[in-house]
Image 1 (tube, rainbow over the protein chains, first blue to last red):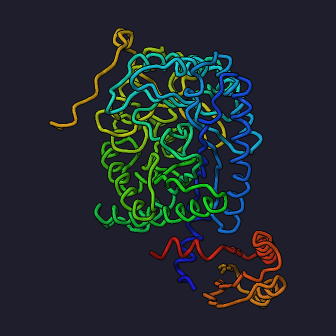
Image 2: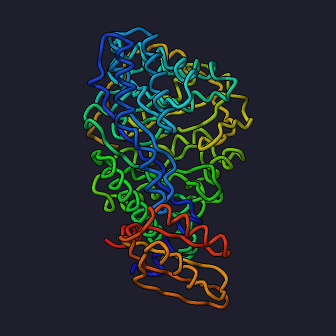
Image 3: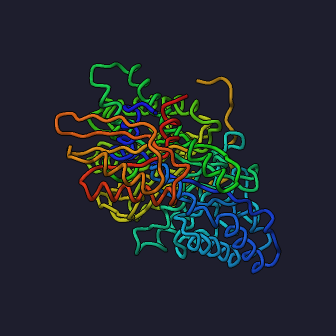
Length: 451
Length: 89
């Protein structure tokens, strides 16, 4: 029989400390749906998704029940839709969006990702068509998520795309203004985007992936924070890092188990486990609280970047041994609106946009779910994107930007559900308009002479 | 296939009998029991074989949770593999 203390530890993690599997995401390739007739293209896409993912939700629910571990989201990611848009019109791209959304609704999944384009080096006709359709697509669908990769360490930064995405975010915010600019919560701009990410809004099924695949994202900030509190105030940071590693190992082992079960039952190959600490707005399920339990008065104060760097590294070290394949975004997430501690810290002024930007240099993803004033000009949005993307490109890591222009500085904007709520953070009054309007590409950075 | 049933709550007469009865009713065989009472707090862990279960395992999980609610106890029924995965390398 398993050890008594181990059994109660597991039950306590799940019941009291919000341990859960954040998502089982099925990746589905749409390459063989390609067709020059828009109607047939959409019906093929719909049929293929419905065929492969028909049992996804039920399987997730069954595993949740039998193993007693909550599985919060079941999702689908598909081949970047821009690759399907080469020979079709903007209306055709919008029909693809509605088809994906309809399939997601009928499957009962909460999000479908892959309304995406990869333009780090330049635009194809398909990516132009898709990006021009993003604002309307996000405004007229419920479950669709979109992402655009504008840079990579090997290609540099496509500044035309950065400028365009400032405009697209602005338009998306305007079209969904009545609803807290919710469209922008489903749109991410990436550098070095991973092709096997199970998390939304950035998930898509990369071009090197198999026909179908199961990727799993784990969570558990509450478990890590509790473990640090239990370790006590007298232990040093080496011991704290060890505690985080041990906890991350246990969390990830559950993710690996669920991924293997889902893969077997759905007869779909197992892809990766994403070693993530993904917060939710629920009290106790916060990455900011972990940082505060390490010893920060408030998340965002001096020392935050160092604490986050240690946390992110320890999560990876602990998790990597627990899973046979690791991938996706893997690290601590710091989405402001989805994290009770970040919301508090941003609300009281401890956490600024500039500090968040510094934090993204050492942790997973980037400027995520941050509300900025609704009247922020396009060029300023593009400037914020460019800065964040440069951090990713130079440091050979994934970074991303998910900004929500809504309300006025100091307002609280609510998105509902797991997307949470965020105080509107002020941005600089000075404009990078001339630089952004220059366009072109920032060349790929040198990978030697590191200083 | 094995599952772990954990029962915690205020001590009372007949807790083990009630849990065991439900196991017997659905053809669930008890392999091991570990039980203690600390002051008035009852805590039990039961390892059971679910190979011969007469309803779906999910149905049995629900029945056990219901039994817990009826008797003011916390009863969790989980597949053994989750504990092995988390605590054994």
